[in-house]
Length: 295
Image (cartoon, rainbow, N blue to C red; front, top):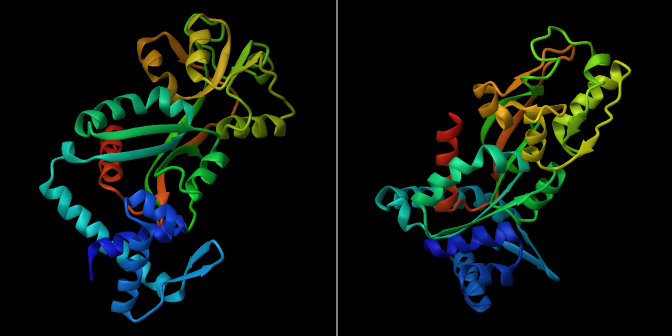
């Protein structure tokens, strides 16, 4: 049984298309078809059903897939042991949220690009539902997102970490240092928020609605860096993950406000699709990210 045939089998199972598999692996479509026929001949079973343009695993294919992925993972691990990270090449597509791009990923990417200079990395930002769709459609290799703790059977989760979300203001704000700030007074302040649909904003809106309050931001913007700039100029308050403003909290330029609101916690989570062939660059990125976030 040839490893390349298992690679081709796993990729077809992932993308569900023979011609796309041929394009991605650099083969002709006839070569891909021949590899699958060889594998089916060795195993004595049909692995795919082709109905029109759709390609689906047969029951035999479904049974083979986890073993094929395990074999390929072992081969990849053996290669990684004897190969320096700098020799890794190819592409890496990461789906993530904007706040991670601005806050957590820069030092991660600096190290990763130093270790793997031949890998072409692209980052795609979107709201979480859109990121999920990108993962299912194989438009990204890894998904790094912030939301409530989630588990789906088609995912492999390799990292999760709690992230605290707070109301934040300038250290010169009249609210700085006050205890148990009433919601009425809190919401009198100019409010800068991330766009609707962000998980932690939705959680806060739900909590306030239960208490009879609504959020009325003076500006909604999808860039947390912009919001942070307004806070540093003492222009108002915001509701943000601690990691977004950690540097300024440590420097004493921003402060966490003590409010009547219950603590909200979201989870940063790194996942990939269960049917995904894990490339060396994916493994290296996972390792670097886990090192930086202390997972």
